Image (cartoon, rainbow, N blue to C red; front, side, top):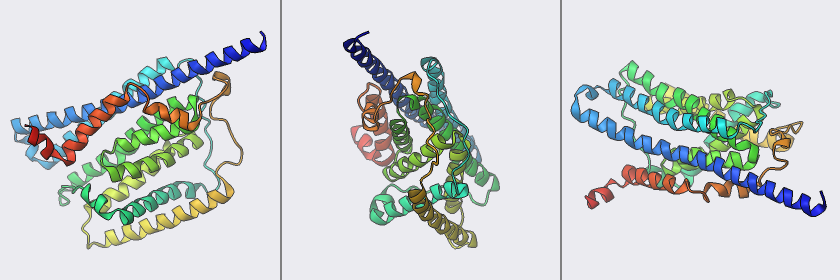
Length: 330
């Protein structure tokens, strides 16, 4: 094989891998579009059921139904994606080494949460009216222990398990063979978009980057699940507790402690680095190379699945925050 033949072979190989990467990203994008569509279907089913029976007047039953629908619109699209990936990537070896936490492992976890709070605080300080516009009130009967328990399960426990499985365990893991940076960026943006309102999109995207790095480094979903759970649990408990209670004061102190740990983590890991030894996540013999981050991330927009994703997202966004536009059309 002469030099020209080698060059043509490599060129065809790169083109083929590029096409495969685009298809993998398309599956990921379509999964989120399907999740949004199921979310709309669940909202419609909920409203129909509520109009047909009085059983939904019970806050406990309403919360249980919301939890059931939430599980379904996460498990169905991403379970389908996992099934498709199982066949599509069957000849691609995804090597996720089970590594221990880096030095100062506790700081690695609580520092990630603290860094998230720093970002949240910055968004709130820089764009207060923007955050206030998209804020929503939680209508939970705090005097009903069962309602509080269900709310904690639905907003802290289930998202930590299901969303980490979906966005890190399914999407990120199956995009990794085509480029580490692009896989983390794409999965984080999709994770952010799943939260609908703009302030949460910004926070969730940045938080998703940290969760993706934690998963990629440790090779275990337990670490991002733990971080996700602690973050959501603090948020929901702060929402449910009365503003003048001692618990809220203690929670505020805890949040500032997390922020301090976040600052310490940023400084320490910036100086010392996270990895002592650079361990390759992907066995390079699969492709011989991976796509650059920007080129890989651009495949999220430049594919056929992005149009239905944006269409369903725009519909949910307008329905949630500008319903008068639809009422005007009717």
